[in-house]
Every structure is written in structure tokens, then in C-alpha cells.
Image 1: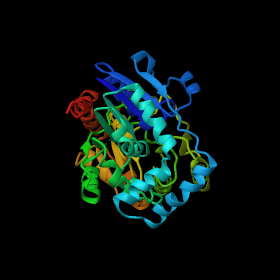
Image 2: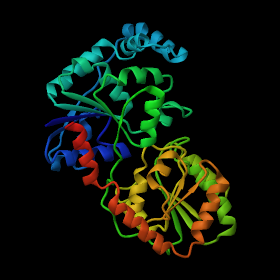
Image 3: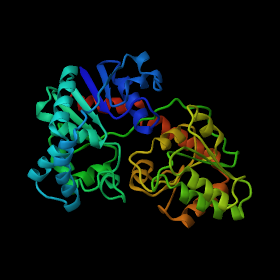
Image 4: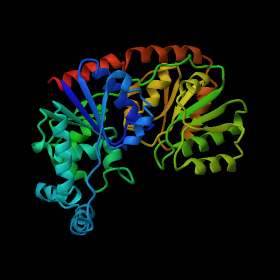
Amino acid sequence: MKICFFCDSIYSFGGVQRVLAVIAKELGKSNDVTILTLDKFASTENDIYELKGHGIKVDFFDFEHIDKFTGYTHKPYSWAYKKYQLRGKLASDIYTRSSFPLAQRKSLIRKLNSIDADIIIGVHAFLSIKLATVRKKLRAKKVIGWMHNSYKAFFENNPAYLEGLKLHFKYQMNKLDGVVVLTNTDATLFKEKLGLETTVIYNPLTLIPGNRCDVNAKKFLAVGRMSPKHKGFDILIKAFSLFAKENKDWTLDIVGEGPERNKLQNLIDNNNLQKRITIHPFTSDIQSYYSAASVYVLSSRWEGFPLVIMEALAHGLPIIASDIPVCKEFLGDNEFCSFFESENVQSLCYALQKAASCTYLEQISDMALDFAKTHNTIDSIIEQWNMLLNK
């Protein structure tokens, strides 16, 4: 079978890129797999995910440049559609033509048909919608959209990823042959809110674990991109500030980069926590941080499916997590995890205090390791993908 993944990037660091690379390499063991990316060709100098060594073909695509005349004639409707939430399938189809002009549609159709894949998989929402709008012109037997964010992140967050495009998403995505979402919670919401049938496939563990965590290190760990109103590192720092007034031993490592970094560092400085909280840049050796930590903290306001949870569990780390739907669904009522009320600083502070005073972290670590060995293994996830692709 010939499979083509269509993505924004495969030559940069990110959770979506890592999951895509892992899934592509596993499917590539028994299929002909191509990744069509919007990366520039020069990016191939940095084969972060070792695709070449696994026989994965990488091809490149760039959308046609839109001339000024087309821009001037198309943008007004696109603006009006999102601004006034125009309803109906016809309005959505017209928006398709205004936001995705004919020249761009034709070039994408030509490129994908030249690859001649049996199955095309759009990675993330924006590209999946574009695939949906040209579905009838594609020769592939099956075209699938693979979502990497939650329903809430797409339509309800402020700002939302698909602000003003809820109805457009509904009408266009129904043109695809399948849509993959990350949780049962999202599957229910897509069905109830948009009438869209979906398939749930969790993300797998995407790295080889390092040494087991150190429950005696008295160290909390958080990992993720520092983007506004997402990972909740500001909430974590404020909660740790309260925690640190009573506890003088535990420290906090935050590994990540992004536009909020300076703001977070200022928050640390203003609370005189420079000796207790350290921000570290992203690294290809993230396993060393998991191995050196005692407890992992997920303070996110929202998530699609947090890869860091699987990575932390695979190192035996007990988990403190916000009570967002994906965490409650995946982690369930297990003793290795404690939940706090999302965005509640005092609730998170209490969870930190409870973990720091726990006298049986070693046993909890054993439970975390056992869970990781039996959940979201790459073999089980690939089996679900094969069932969908061969359906």
C-alpha cells in the first residue's frame, strides 16, 4: 500500500512532528510511505527524526503565490464569512474558493496525484480541510484527516485555532473518508456538536526511555513549549511560589522554549525563586531530565494528547495533572496520578505539597512504570492505524 502524509513540517522540533515520524516509520515497515511537507528543501540537512535510514520518502510542496488582484477579490468574503459566521453548506463552499484560490487548489491536486498514493493523510486541521475541499479531484482511494488538537482548542479557546470556522469545518470535513481524533471525549464532542463521525487513536510513546526517575531527588519537572495560555507554566510558577514558602527542599525544572519564556523568567525573578526554579532549553536528550526528576507536573489549560505524560510514565514518574478531559480520560483513577483543578493556583499548590510529603513515591513509581508498559505501546497504536487504513 502506498501512503502519503501531508504535513506542515517534519524537519523541526515538536510533538506533532515526533508522532508523525514514529507512525510513518512503523507503517513504512510494510508499506511505501511518503511525507509531503511544506518545509523548504534546505531543511533536509537536519534529518531530526532519521527518516532516511527508515526508507521514508520526503517530498516538498509550496502553495502557489497569490497575486494582488486575486487577494483583493477573495479576501472580503473570507473576512465576512468568519466575522459574521455565515451559515450553510453553500456559504462554506464559497469560503473554500475565497480562502483557497483555484491556482492553489490545482497545484495541490497535481502534486498529490503525481505521488499516486492509495491513502492520503492530512496532518492537523488546516491541511486536512484543504484536502477535504479537493477530495473529489484526488485519485487516492481514501483521504483521512488526522487531528492533533482537542475540540476545545479548535473552537472554544480564546483565541481558538479555528476561530470562526466551526461550520466550515463541519461541512468540509464530512467530505473526507475518515477523521482521526485523539480522545473519546473529542469524538463525542465532534459527533454531538458537528455531526461528524470520527475514529479515536491515541498517540504512542515516541522515545526510548532513559534511566528510571530519582524519587529521592526532591525535584518537580515540567516540559513543553512556552506559548500563551497553553501549558500553564505561569500557574505552576505561582503555585510553586506558595509551596516554597513552606517547603525549602524541593526544586522545579521547566524544559522548553517559546514566546512566553521571558515573561516566565520575570515571574520567577519577581518571586525570588531563581535558586528554586530553573528554565532549560529544549534538548534531544530530554530523557536525562525525566531520569533526574521525582514528580512530573502537567499544568496545561488544554491539551490534544500530551506526549509528555507517556514519556514521564515510561521513566516511572508520578504525575500531577490538571483535571482537563484528556488527562482524566487517559490517566483515570490510578494512584500514580493526582489531579488539581485546572487553572487553580491554590489547588496545584496543595497537589505539590501532597507529593512532596508522600512517603511511598517508590511504590507509586512502580505503578507508573507498569502502566507505561501496557498502554499506548507502538505495536498497539499501529494495529489501530492498520485497521483504519485497511477498513
